[in-house]
Length: 419
Image (cartoon, rainbow, N blue to C red; front, side, top):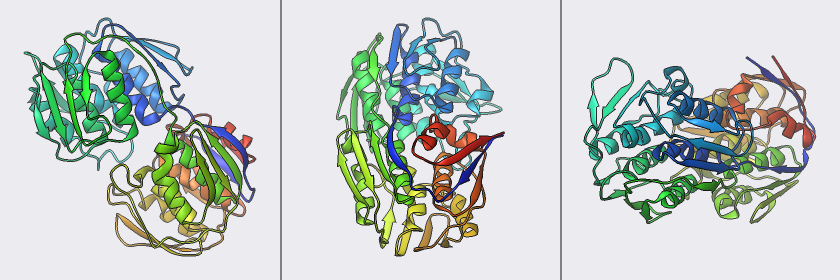
């Protein structure tokens, strides 16, 4: 395990460019299984989660070229097995999205329990319900999940029990190769779901209602290879913006669409952040921050849960009291209790709500990364703190942020990665 030494107190300044959307890269890689032709994905983030998904595809028989670069060429000419490597599955929750493609391509899928952030708390029941509705049968299995569709998948019209992003993506990939037209209501409509819809359309499926909560998809008998360029990661862009803001710095973030950043930037502006948002550019300047009475996460296009940890740190440097309410996931806010040892004034109401009273000076401490986003939030807190901090298990954060140390140093941060 590695850790990050952070010597706080410096105002960050400079420019940072974001990579392609992490949350789009994983389903797009899973969708490559749907065709025997080559798919080329460009602007792929060079992060640990992508590396694991690439190895999962290889464990299924795929050929992947360009590993370690932003352009991957994936060829799934022959898929001899529907059982991806169990150890790799245990490292990546996004591995669950392989089920839809495998059922469509080989007629069966055996998946160990997916790992990743909050694995015990994030159900895959929506995925299983959708696949069963499309004609797959759940087979009793000792460990993990076994599904079979020996006669193929059939179109379905259904209401998804929750607007799960990966559940929607799994259903779409299975339906792209099913006979007939499927309709999914209460579907997720995040930007990365839109990207998957666009890629499936380019592959030969017909997708209607893209960007809405009702999606209609007509499957194709034979899907074809495509070239797709990923959009910039708006969660990463917002993260760098908050890192700049919490240190009182001047930071320009490039590469993400303004439309995707709006739900986050509107809240940051309410907190008094002096910023500009233009397409492909998010500019943050030194600001006098103020508390917002309540910040609540929600389904897109509401404030995203992936940013609530970073905004919690920002609230410690804002005058007044803010209630943070992440009703979507338990445990995410628990990881931020560590801020109390740094001098932050926090009150954890329950597993979904936290009250932050600011402005409070922060002191350096040893901190523990629990998941990708809270880990990045703790790095932001360490950068704003006086003295030296250690952020443990930095590999967790590197799952979602490429070239983390190099980018921090380029902005003027005094950081060092140690084993």
